[in-house]
Length: 101
Image 1 (tube, rainbow, N blue to C red):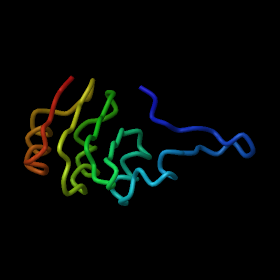
Image 2: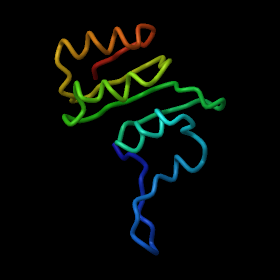
Image 3: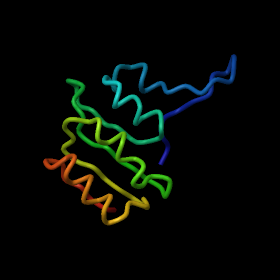
C-alpha cells in the first residue's frame, strides 16, 4: 500500500504531500506519517484510523503510538508485535478497536 510520499522533481527531496494539505495536524500524527504509518483523519482533523503494514512495525512502534490520545481504529497487517506489545498497545489506547488483518 503506498504511503503517499513523492520525490521533488527539482531537488530529489522526499515529500509528503498529504501532510502539506493539513490532513495530519499534530506532531504525533506527523511523526507517524513520516515513518510510513497510514494516518487517516476526518474533516475536523481528528484521527479516524491508524494503519501499520509490514514487519518493521512492532513493539518499538509503541513509543510513537503512545503519544496519541485518541484513536478509534488501529489496523495491523504483517507486523511483528509480541503478545506483550499488543497488551501494552491495548493499555495505551483502551478505547481503540485493534484489528489484525
